Image 1 (cartoon, rainbow, N blue to C red):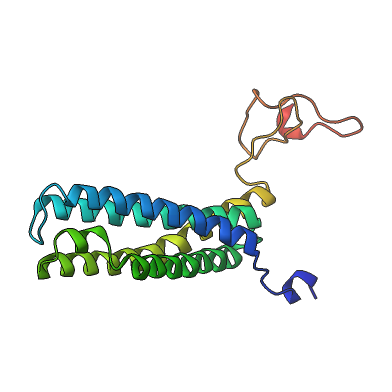
Image 2: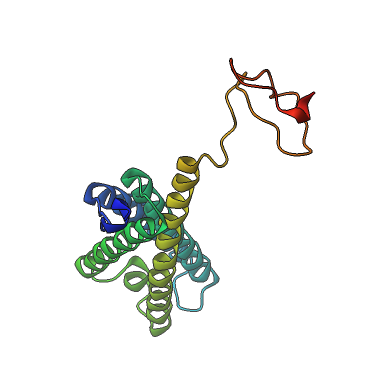
Length: 192
């Protein structure tokens, strides 16, 4: 029985916190930029309010993806399951921190600036979209980083060192990377 199969998933909190800090900081920057654009012409139906909300939403999703990816890379996730777990926990910390900031500040700048019903609906709607988008993005970031680590460990996607002996594949001749066989080995018949 494989020993690694019995080992559970290892959550590395330092990596999770690093990813969450990146996600929160990026989302905060996006929220401020979006709110700033919304202040150009306050109101629930303002074009600037919509543009600001879309930019804030995009930056939140990008920040969550980056947070999940960073957490998975720092944790050196062994497989995609561990990567997804790190991404999801980053999202949980990110969501909790975002909710606390929202509560502490009494809403966001769009709610404070244009306290119309339309502005409130717009802010809450985009906040919910951002939270669900961040969930998917953080999980995807963790998965992609772990997948890249799996490929690296398996040697996929890595080029051989210059001058290294690389046996040719059947029917493929690549003289630019083939040098000579190591000492004591026969030359493959396809090379003659």
